[in-house]
Every structure is written in structure tokens, then in C-alpha cells.
Image (tube, rainbow, N blue to C red; front, side, top):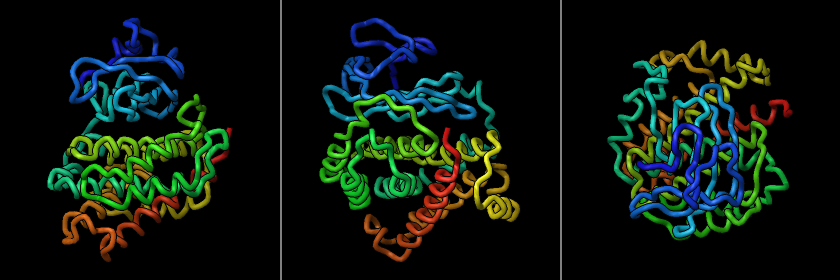
Length: 323
């Protein structure tokens, strides 16, 4: 996948010049290759977001393609370990600490995705995004973002309405309406809960781009995204020595967790997300309901699992002290 970054910290602008990524501002025009298109096309930066993760801090530029009117995400790592372009991950394994039981690289975790057809991969993506839903619905967004709650509700409803991997005009229309919020014309300085909200929103946008193809790589990238956010919260709580309600229950869960989850040596949210993810993928592969999975008893059980995890995630995010 070609990308517009020249060197480790510079972005190719539409006029042919380059600019350090931390100097890119809303309204700038950058250029990048677009999958399936010849040459490069211009993108207008509509938001600049930063995330200081424990292992991979990076800046994110949200850009509207002038020709396709789709939101694409460009991430430049400050550590040099990872580059995300058009929602696809490229890993520099020389900088990483992968091991046979590292969930970031373990092929065992993607084996189920490789067994899925397109509709099943769409369902896996939906459940991954469902596990991020409560931060969107249960935590108030900043007023200056101007997000219409009705538009958000329609987006989430349409995102669950047709899980067959095919393009969905109603979902795209809901996404277009949601994207009219001032958020998409602003620079933002998010707190921890807002980081999760932005990641969930961009996840839905990446899912929209994947419809019609929903490849193994696209599915894996979106599923891994939810894993990374779970680990990010664990690391944040650990490194900041933040104590939130439910600490004893979470420690008890980790003390009782069985193999193979124990072997990943992850924190509570990363481990719990992996457990729910595994049950979702198993249910998807064994269900006979096809695209109508959510209407079945199995689908409802998986929804409950994801929602319970998501509500716990939102509760902890809400309890974290703000700066």
C-alpha cells in the first residue's frame, strides 16, 4: 500500500512540498495514493488528533478525499514502530517484541477470520465495534463537537441492519449525516474517554470503506483495533496508578482466567476483550443463521457479551479523573 509520508515524520502536501506531521493543520491539503485509483489524489485535513499510547504514540489526520468523499485515516508513529495508512497496518517487526503468545502478532488469533466468508467477517467487525459502543452512547461527548444524538443513533442502528459485507446505502447515508457534525471541521484535544469515542467513530468509518470487499486484512485491522484499545486502557491505568471501582473484581478475574488467555499475560480489559472476541468468532462460525445472526438466540447472546464488556469499559473511562 503506497502512502504519503516521506521519511519518518514528514507528509507530502498537495502542492508537492513536504511538512513535518506535527505542523499539519486543519484545512491543509495533503496527497496520497488511493486503492484502486491511478496516481495520487488530494485530501483536505478536517481534524488532527493525538494519542499518546504507552508503546505507540501517534498523530492522526482525518481527511476528506475530494473525489470520493470518504473519511480516511493517516497515522504517523512518533516511535517509528507502526504506520497506519487507509486503515491498513504495516508493522516494522524489528522494532516490536512479538512472541508466539503476543496477541499483536499471533497468527492463531487470526485463524478464525481466515475461515470466515465475507458476511461472517462483517459480523466479526460489527461485534468488535459493538464492544466500543457504550463509550459513544453512555459518555456525553463535548458540546463543541456538535454531535447530533439522533444521527448517532441512526448510524448505530443502520450499522447493525445489514451484516452481509455488501455496500449499504442506508448506512452510508447515516454516516454522511453524522459526519456533518462540527467535530469533523475542528482540531480536538481529547481526554481519555474522548479518545475512545474518536476511535469508535473512525472504526465505523473504516468499516464503511471496507463494505463490498471486507477482506481478511480489513477485518483483522478493525478487530485488532479493539484489542489495542483494551490494552491501551490497561496500560494507562497501570502506568498512571489510577484506581477505579471494581479493581478487586478485575484482579480476581485475572487470577482465575484459564489458558490460553492467561499465556498472553495481558491486563484485565485486553484479556476480557480477547475472551469475548473468541466467543463471538466461534459463534459466527458455528451459527447457521447467516446475515440474520443478530435475530437468533446465538446472536442475542453475543450482543449481550459485547454490551456487558462495553458498559464496563465505559464505566471505567467515566471514573478516570480528567486533567
